[in-house]
Length: 238
Ligand code: ADE
Image (tube, rainbow, N blue to C red; front, side, top):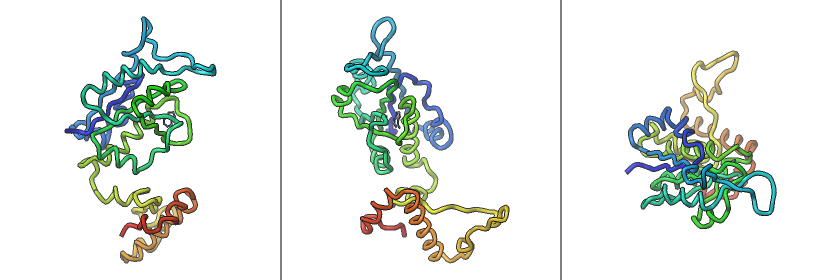
């Protein structure tokens, strides 16, 4: 049984989009994961298939109606429910540990909002997890859904070549990853750090470790604070 991605969107043609290419695209073709993009408009009301209305309490923009969203969820769920995730800048920041949790389950149902958002009651009624991909505002949840799916799909068994890439990468140990270098050893007067050419595995590991810590401390003081306060629960990779 493949990992399932069900999308509720006003723009189903945005899917699979970039996920039809490269590793994710190959895995889609091989049936490692499956995609069902449902058009929210199909559940709209009246001759114009309206999906939104003005906000109670006033204010700018339009809000997606709970009855329309609920009908779409019901139609897309059938008798095989998936965790419902709503992409919104109001959500909890998506983290790699969430991605690992979703990737190890049966799949996800992603609700993509447009306009000002979705009526909160339908999110409550379905216990939707509200997730943000960063502190900036997109024009809709679709690009965020693509980001979330990409992060999950690369972790599915058989999608990514080397298992090591998944354990050594940024965030897997709470730190940013060390920098990478390849040939030529000197390029435009810039040399590769000599230790990487030494063949001394312990020295290379120590250098990479120091680089990872340095990058995390300077670029992500938030991650560094967590790492520094849990030195035992965030061990460094061997
Ligand atoms: N929809 C609009 N902006 C978003 C964001 N930053 N994350 C998730 N969904 C969004």
